[in-house]
Amino acid sequence: MQPTPASDLQNRLDRFETYLKKSDMKITRQRMQVAEHIFCSSNHFTVESLADELKHKYRPGISRATIYRIVSLMVEAGMLTEHNFGQNSRRYEFIPGQKHHDHIICLDCGRIDEFVDSEIEKLQPKIAKKHGFTLEDHSLNLYGRCVELARKNRCPHHDAAVQTPGAQMV
Image (cartoon, rainbow, N blue to C red; front, side, top):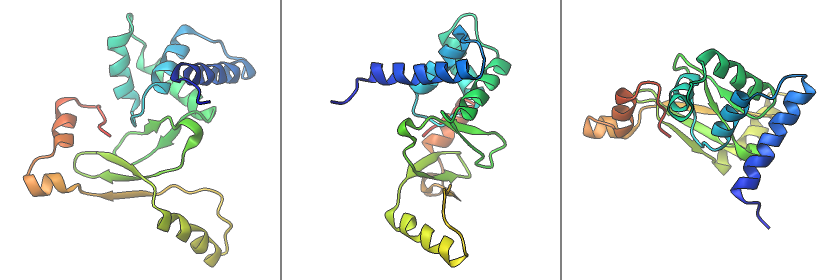
C-alpha cells in the first residue's frame, strides 16, 4: 500500500528531527517550518527564492541567515541536493527517495529541466572503466539555450524570472 502524502511528509520531518537530535541541535519551530515547506515543494530553489516564499507564509518572517543555516543542515543531513549551475547562486532540490536524474539548464532564462536518458546511463560505466575508474556516482548538467526565446523572441520562463527576481521556474 502506498503511504499517503501526509505520512510521507511526517516521515521526512521525523527523519530531520532525528538528525537534529543526533547532532545535539534544537528542534525549533523555524527549522521544522522551513523543512516542511521544502518537503512539500518540487522546484529547484535558491535561499533567496525560498525566503520570498516563506515571508508570505509565516509572520513574523524567517531571516535569510536562519534559512541559510537550515538549508545547510538539510544538505549535511543528505535531505537536500545542492547544485551550482553557474548562475551566481546555489540551487537546491529535495528529491524524494533520491531518484536520480540529470539537468539541462537554459543560459538565457535559467529554466531547469530534469531528464533521465538510458543511453547516457549505459555509457557512464563504460567511460569510467575506459579511464580506469569504478563509477560511484555522477552529476550531469547540460547547458544551452531553450528554443522559445530564439524562435519567438520571448520566453515565458524568461518573462517570469524577470517579473519575479529570485524565482525559479521548472
